[in-house]
Image (cartoon, rainbow, N blue to C red; front, side, top):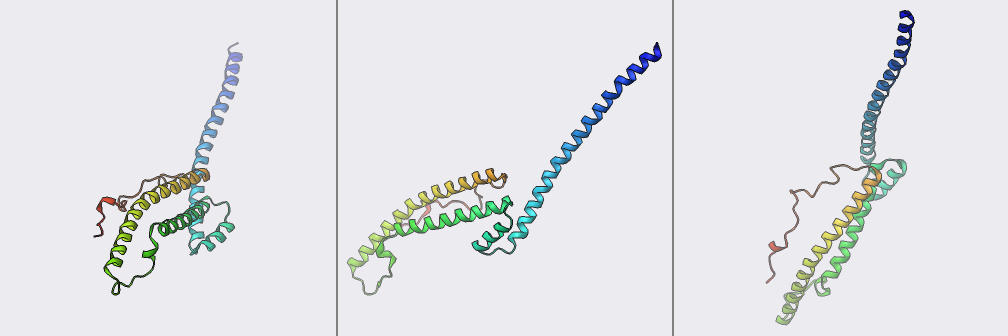
Length: 183
């Protein structure tokens, strides 16, 4: 009878040992797959660096993106380039609106009368106040474009602490109180 009960115990242990071995193998496989994702990200970064090495203008960036359409980093760089172009266009438009027409053309100061110089001074004061208001509008616009780009990065799966970092203290924002007044 003891021989029969030993056999039942041994046969009951074997499935438990196999199940435990299978669980350990699955755990090791999951850890290995996690490492593979890290290597895939490294490969994507290396591919992006190689592809961007010869890019010099936006048209070349578009061609490179067509060659590597699945590369998330290249897609993010292309979107950043588009946002930069939009910001540049908006900035030029705002600057054109802020500067009075009289200041846009060169002035002959030697042949100007006192009244002309006073008018020029008033135009400069108006342009100065317009530019101060423009700085706040530009900051809001840049922040909005940056948030759009961060959102795109999250959608592309390129979320990184580097992307979400605040502006560098090396390049502080302009302080409007430190401007020198025109007199």
